[in-house]
Image (tube, rainbow, N blue to C red; front, side, top):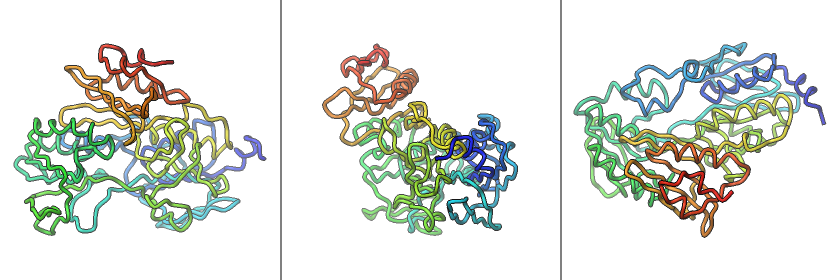
Length: 415
């Protein structure tokens, strides 16, 4: 087996495919290790790295991109060759390197980081807008104003954020949700239903148990499966995202949901130790949380450090710091939400409520093992949850003390 130093000398060229947060962090990680090889970045949007969450959270209040160089000090200046409008179209891993095919030709490299992100899901009969990129946000912002009839399909994270922002801008907003409650897919109907009143209070019409069958073109009529029709000026589809992985299907084991299964170091099996996948594209095994899918901001922020270190220097020890808990943060309808961990439909929910907010705690059935925490307008609970999920194993809490909002969450720990 090669030593770390031997592997470091062997990797003299690295291609990062993707110019978002995970891609920018991959560039930073390589140079932070002191690696001085040739580094190429391939992007698809023609833009420098920017932060995506503000596109929905601050749709009408922040009209310019949140450049990562300003937000995090993360940019692509340390790369030798940056091609922001030359997406990769194919990949061939070999024992001696990787060939990357692009819209402009081909590149041979010793190693590759895949950080291509995801794209919005848009059912075939839905002639609707989606929100993923800076141009998407600019177009939506231009189309929505006072009195605009906006129909948002999906009451998930993005749908709720846009609904709140558009209502504040004077639009007449209807949110159509196929499930029993907002965020039911992420939080379960029991917890998700606690957000229903937020829509009413914000002046948003919410329809649950109402799957959309089609969005007509060009009338923008939204047809529901029960036969009813909603008139709209603008329709936004916000029903989830899928990894941008179709271009990899002939060369790597892409799963039916579009993810690439990686190991605990973000490496793609069967690629001779030459390909890593990070961010939305990757599904990784967590000793603490089980299999964790992409789409978590912290994973894109922190995962590339271990992925790149392994590519350049070979496998090393992996600890809790290399296993960030799934994390989602959202500002929607006047409330700040932070979710850490991975709720399961089988888990039991314990609530800690106070006049200013509430927190949902998910416990494994019949025990003290905490699997996830959602803090709503309770930032101290979110901060405490981050510390609780920093260990090797899932934390154990006294349920009675954890339900008391006057008891700091960490003081409910059973050690």
